[in-house]
Image 1 (cartoon, rainbow, N blue to C red):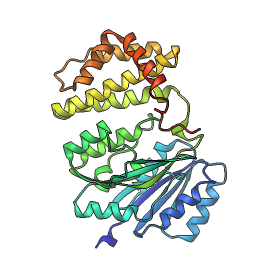
Image 2: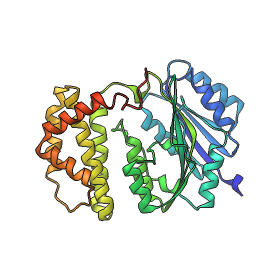
Image 3: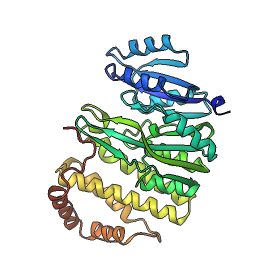
Image 4: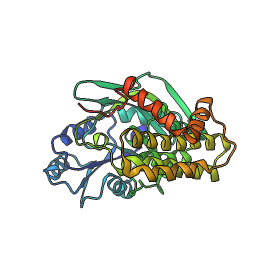
Length: 333
């Protein structure tokens, strides 16, 4: 019965000729074989298209799309538009996966009647590998716990590439094309809203490759600064209208933290051109009234941010300089 269930895998590809064969080979080597493999070239110019065509000749499960460059979100959406599987998954074309990844995810989904099944990953640097988190534990999430966990992000990571989704919960969802950073957080938030039950097994099947020139290692820009705030604001506003006070409180804390982090980066990096926008966002969240259940740390941080901003930013500056030289987990040296 398990083999009758099809998984559609959506693989966006943009100028990754050097890395794409490894990715495709790892998909073809999956122990679970009932796959629909959708390879989408996002206007590549480096020979990526030729790699895609060669593999399509070798395996009938591969579907190809060649289109003009429009970004990873629109590319994933094109895959969602044509996917026919019972479950949907994503793999980035410069990453690769362990052979048992999709067999394990699907087995967990079926055994637990879960709408989302997800796992851990390993972040591969040129000189080291960091595991997230490789504990082997298994967690069952009802609707509320799944929503809470994706907002907090303390162990459930937002990447769509470590998950499979029952198709009916993402039928009407698409990646936001106007957001470049944390678009996966927003997509997954709504997916977990639609999910009655999820299962997470902390095994690092996915190899997330960090290399210079990838989106995660790019320099600070307007999207990196403000998109996380936009995402957290939308999640908070949706929660206010549709979810209970506990989730509203978690969403508020996340929204507040995104603005504090923005202020922190702008202040400590001396990005004067973004100072006024940061000040406006601070004013907007300061006006929000509500009885939220906040931790002592969040309450203290909120008070300092609203009333002693300079002191809080100075504290962060000292902390970053003396205690957190390696805070950027995406740094590639």
